[in-house]
Length: 304
Image 1 (tube, rainbow, N blue to C red):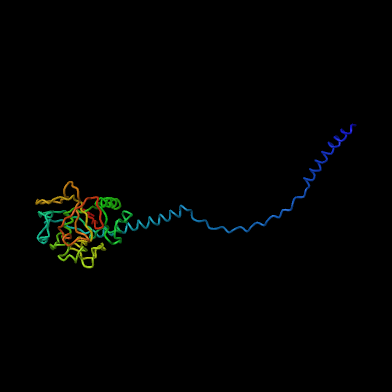
Image 2 (image 1 turned 180 degrees about the vertical axis):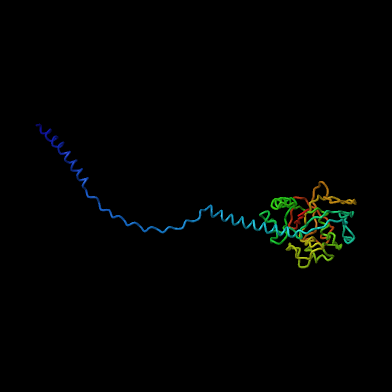
């Protein structure tokens, strides 16, 4: 046999032996010892936190419940504070007790006959406005202060929402209803201001001692008038429903003012005004979109 062939044959014979040996080595190679770590102690189960949305929902529900309670409380107070004004006839305008203070806008005096209605003994407070609207526009903050910095248009938005909550028909008073109530209705003692001839008894106004005109004051802290109404003179001006217009001498039944105009009537004077503005017959007006930190409102119902 050729020596080269002999060598190749020997190599081929050795290959299976080597592979078999390698296989045997691989199969029987001792596996490295593996030390299994002891299982860690099982942590104690933590209580599962409440799902996030449930937590938020609970918070919202609490807040909603609180606001609903507040609204309910304020609406109950409002209804309880509505004063019945028995219908009657009175002379509207610059009557004799107004003396030389009566200006041309208050003339001529004229006879007005009104049906019965209800009017709130207080100006609308910030607590009531916030409960209904969810916000408070007032410059001087305080739950029992009259709401202010509200335009006539703002008042309509507030009243519409209030009526949707209550199912009633609250509204602003007509100018005639406002003056009749300010004069004390059928119980009138013909005072110059609402409830007295001495303005400091019944009004927070610009000339009052202690610079009371610097800010508004809690409702109902001066004397009431003959009907038990507070702050009809002073504190904040009160919007009425009427367009502003000139008086006529004709007798009228339940007048609602002109059919159109550019300004709405305001009554009662405010914290910054002198006594002249706080008289029961004094008239003022402003654009329905204008607001000021002396402008507020009082509510009326034709029936409860």
